[in-house]
Image 1 (cartoon, rainbow, N blue to C red):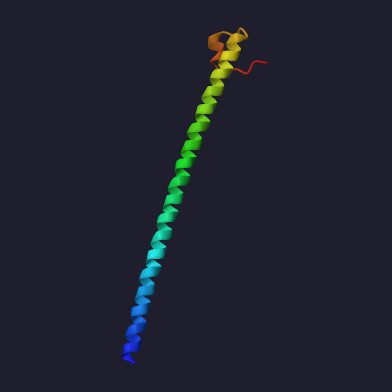
Image 2 (image 1 turned 45 degrees about the vertical axis):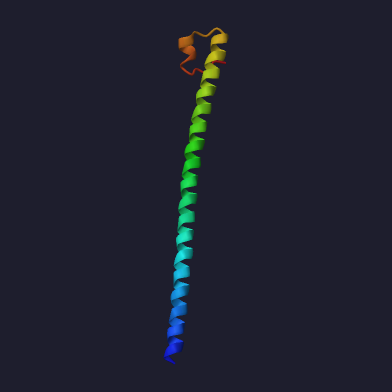
Length: 80
């Protein structure tokens, strides 16, 4: 009787260790996904900012070519 109980407790302790390892792996995976999502958000924001800056420079150059003074063109005026 006691040997059966010891065997059952040994099996339970092994299962508990495996369950803890699985939870640790899931936690690390979730942390990696969260970090990756944050990294991608920062990357997208930087790309959006760069695109906006390039668009602004293109608008300024077009306005200057149309005869608008460089100072007025640099003020981001939308002249039709």
